[in-house]
Length: 268
Image (cartoon, rainbow, N blue to C red; front, side, top):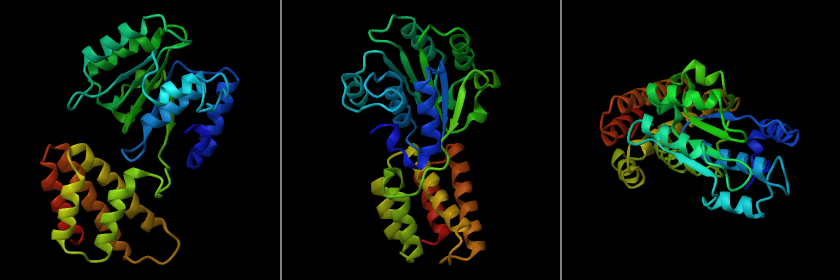
């Protein structure tokens, strides 16, 4: 896959491709989108577009560099992921040490997943790298909510919002929400929906992805110009229930309880 395959982001990817082809590559990008958006995949394909010599600006998917990025064995790629509920200072310190190394290839590339979960200490540490990056370094901050990032971080990055991802079968994150949404619309019993979700959701992160997907589906109904199978007040009520469940999860309520309570409310 390459940038040209993101048809739902065509205007954005065209702009990115032109910038890369013109040699305008930033040292830091923020990719913002909800948990249904594969931000890491998008960052990986942006990295291919930056590094690929065969098809600069998009990536060819066939050269050694593209294939290494696809298979997670590119020597100059460093990935930071949240440990439990945060990205800690020590993780960013280790990343900085790695980014000081001379790259095997042309550039060092870093992905900071769950960047909005960085502690204040971690953000302030990262700021030093953003202010004085090693030449050629490109850092991708992947975030669901940039409001949690310091303004000094935001001001030193190019921000791309991936918020208009099409709801379609091509998005695997939508599989469970679409199935449950259909079950709710068909009036399935709570027990059947619960049984399905117990098999599909393994943790709080899965539950958050499910909520994001369900909210997309409800909002699609709300803005649709065609006939709706659900009254507008029920759609708004459903969205409110989804937000309640999200707040429960953020307050560390057990994810199974929060989701089961949601299903009961929206009509299981």
